[in-house]
Every structure is written in C-alpha cells, then in structure tokens.
Length: 225
Image 1: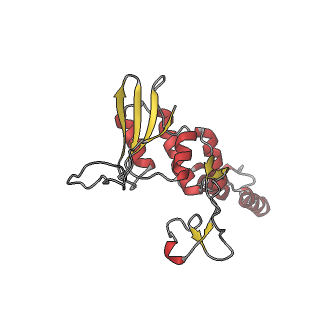
Image 2: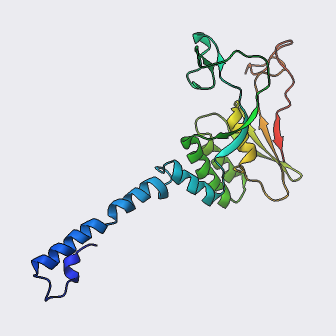
C-alpha cells in the first residue's frame, strides 16, 4: 500500500502501536517486488525466463518442441570443429562417436530460449498479419535478421513461395514446416524454396553456378502444403 497513513482514522493516526503494526504489515505484504519479478520473468517477452516463454508460446499458439533428424555428435579432429555449432559439430574424445553411416533418427528437440523467443514474436506477428507480400517480408526480415536475403513471391494461380537465398539449418527447416509460423492465405498453396549456389549452370559474371561434374540441378523445394 502507498501513503498508508492517509487512510488511518484520526483517532488512531497518532497511536505509535497501531501505526507501527500497520507499517510492519505493509512491509510484509508489499507486492511491488513480486509484481516487478512477474513483469520481468513472465509478462515481458524480451526478458521472460523459460517458464514465461512456455506461457507466451501457449498464448500465441507455437510449440517449443519440433521433430528433427539431428545426427549425433561425432568424433573428429580440431580443424573440423565448428565454433558456431559447438554441440553438433565434431567432438573430442569421450564426447563424440564414430560415424557408422546410419541415418539420423527423428527425435523431439526443444528450441533454445533465444530461438524460441524470436519464434514467439514472429508467431505473434503472423497471427495478426494481412498476408500481403510487404507484411510477410517484414516478418521474414525479423525472423532471419542478418542471415541473408529471404522474401515472399506471389506466383499466381493461388500459389506462393517463401524463398531463402541461404542454407537453412535442420532445426530451422523443422520449425518452419511444423510450427505454423509462416502464414499463408486460405486456399493458397505455399512452397518453401531454398536457393543454392552449388547448382549446375553456365558461366556468368556473378560466378554463382558450377561447371560440369561440380554442380547438380536444383530441385529447391523443401516443403509444400
């Protein structure tokens, strides 16, 4: 309570015992600290902890769990270590296994807090979007900030494409195709395209194609629904 002394009846306002009791009680039940903690850990998406993100995920309807075919960590040498992916690249002794050629098993994977936070904000935008190309391009720009060019194409005849001019990770493909974070107008066929430079083509000034025996024809399509 704030300014609690103003609420006392005049006959009790000068009683040291009553005012002390009320003051102590006010300090014990003061909810300000709890309200601040609730705002920081639950209500504010930008600072919410893992539990707070789970709550927001249910509000905007996006799950933290995705199914992905992630290969196990494999034993390897230092020159092949990828600092950007320290837990999925080659691992030292006692941390990785030899590759026996077996295909990766599909398993449930929980997104890390920062990825899930970005996904929640993107899904919130998707929930209120008008599905215009301009709005969807802004959504992609937020979700993949700093990654490279990605955009939406209206390909006519009730079809559209999400095009990514960079390589998507296994987890990114998983949440793009499973979470519903990429909206599409009702009745429109949506296709995800991953453009690649390592495809067969003819020489040009951009040097973005490969010669014979070096590149393959691009299929491009990751998922259609």
